[in-house]
Length: 163
Image (cartoon, helix red, strand yellow):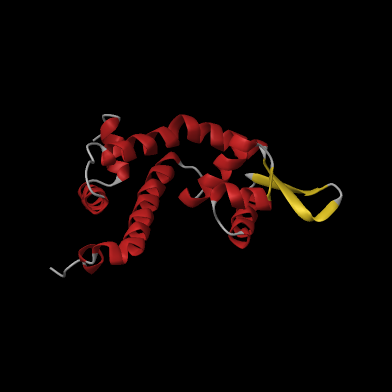
C-alpha cells in the first residue's frame, strides 16, 4: 500500500487534507441528495439555505454569506436560476446590482430538504464526529478513517434503521 503523504506531512499539508475531507463530505452528501431525488448539487444547497435564512440577497451579500467569490456566486446562481430554484431581479435604482430570491419551486425544495435531507446529513456527520477528542491532526485522521469505514449515506441509513 502506498503511503498517504498528505496525512504523513501533518500541518504542512493541512489545507490539502481539509480540501480532501470537504470533497469527500460533499460527495457523500450528494449520495444522500440523490436518494431523495432532489435536482440540486450538494454545493448548491448552501446558496439556497442562505437565501432561505436571510431572505432576498444581492449577489454581493450572497457572496459574503457563503464565503465564495462573486464570480463563483454568479455562476452558481445562474445554474439555480436555470433550474427554476432561484430568481433574480434588478435592484431598483441600480442596474448593476441584482437581488436573488427563491422561486416557489425553490421554497418547496428547501422545505423538503429541511425535513428530509438536512437532518440525515446532520445526523450522519454528527455520527462521524462522535467521540472526537484531542489534537486536530488526530481528529482529522479519525474523520478520514470514519468516512473510509462508512460514508455519510450509509451512516444516515443506519441511523434510520435501514440496511
